[in-house]
Image (cartoon, rainbow, N blue to C red; front, side, top):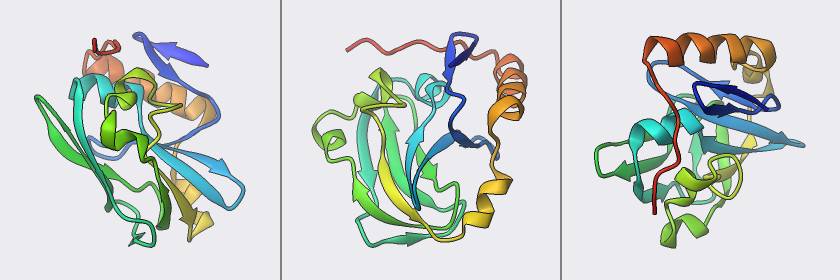
Length: 149
């Protein structure tokens, strides 16, 4: 685990860092888990609502798999790859702040079937991810914190 400006950056994840999007993907065999990064949850503030696409929904890379709403922001969580949603984190319905409290653990958003594994090559990981995170977080002056309940 690395840290930049207080933001956790797990080394084992793939990151989708296009535009203002900051989602992550963790491979689990032919499936993957998708979530919102520590930096993104910090920028959003306390998460109040999460709407995730239903199981069976197919999404193209760059299309929303979920919508997040906070007191100061509402926006999509974009899919890092072409996928099919196979499972939703139901705990987010009653406790959306899990994304703030544990963005890489209990705050995961959905599990997906990766439809085009070759798209993983376009995502940032490892040392390249750490370098990109340093650039983005320094440029935007983001300092990560966990929201208070």
